[in-house]
Image (cartoon, rainbow, N blue to C red):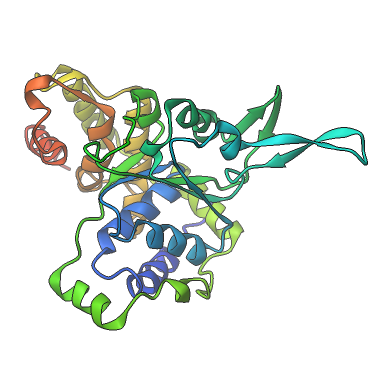
Length: 312
């Protein structure tokens, strides 16, 4: 496959940065997760731009967008869809739920009950849903952006490890800088303008980029050993009850390859791995009780400093 330029990605970042003041890092990480073929969990307080981020990505990529607002009375069929009896045809007809979109925003996922949360497991893991014994394939590409309120918030249900493991990356958006917030306060919300944003990529180009980063970004033996050293270190570290799984190692590899592509390189470097690891690892490992109060992202960054970086 011929080398693909990342200039279109830069155009997306530039276009969306006008609407998402001060959220350039969150935007870049979200696109990294998308092109790596995974799903994204955003954990933050309400009102910081999570929905705007999801809408912006969908519009910039020209993809179908669906939204699921999670509440404690949301049913699994509200997510996947259900069969409705058609009297004229004298047969049941399947009515797809909002999960049947390219990009799906699952807002406040931890307000849904565990039973409803589990309805997302097959969709996120297998890119399909099974309803009443029949399997339906989801569109390609398929990308879930789930938002999660802090667990201290009222009426939340913690996501189990099996659900957390379906998310390739977990990020936070955070408060904007003083300057960025001043622009928002003086200029007002521009969310409505997002709906008229012109797509920056075609569907074929999106799928080509996803295939390119999986197959054409070169990984040397030294860099692969470095990645495996990180994985092994999480399994032996005194900080964790359980370290990174093989699925987690694959997530780290795939997202680091996309970061290399964003850096306009056709090879993977240790810097790509070190940059992306704090957003891939923390939600996939289980910290011991005495380490649960620390900043998980900073803990992973500290861990990375203890692992020798290969010399070329």
